[in-house]
Amino acid sequence: MAIRKIRELGAFGDSVLKKPCKEVKEITPRIQDLINDMFDTLYEANGVGLAAPQVGILKRIVVIDVTGEDPILLINPKVLETSGEQTGYEGCLSVPGKTGRVTRPNYVKMLAYDENLESFEIEGTELLARAMLHEMDHLEGHIYVEKVEGSLQDVDDIEEEE
Ligand code: ZN
Image (cartoon, rainbow, N blue to C red; front, side, top):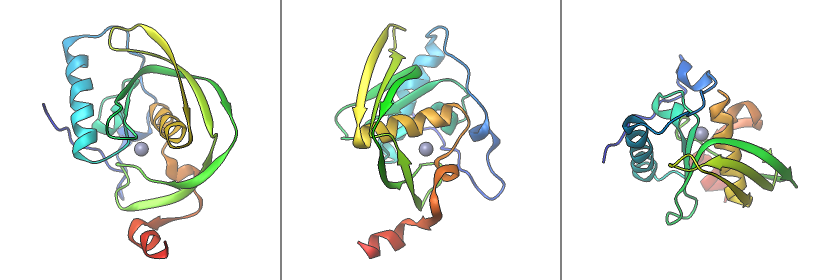
């Protein structure tokens, strides 16, 4: 078990967060370690999703767990289908303490690969769809702040409102 350092979008920006990631072609011991560490890092940070570039690795690997009991690993994910719309506050482990409103599809179907590089399809709605699409953006070097409607806010201010 190892916790990796989460790269943050600071004043100077961490350029690793803005680059497109490469496909995973084989599961080496290094990749397996990376996957295990990404789950450890996600749970340690109490996040719902983490993409490899957030720990400084430009590979198409995402881990998600929206309930804390349902770990999802997506390798080389591709969006097959989306529908509907949802608007809500979103945050990112690479932009700590901030949140903003983002509109995304309410449903997504993706094709991805598991840790044996076997393909599977996965569907998500609501928070899971939001997390899957948020993490997908990371693999292309995009961060949710680019999509925020209005301005980025402090998490503390939002909690006071509600
Ligand atoms: Zn993020």
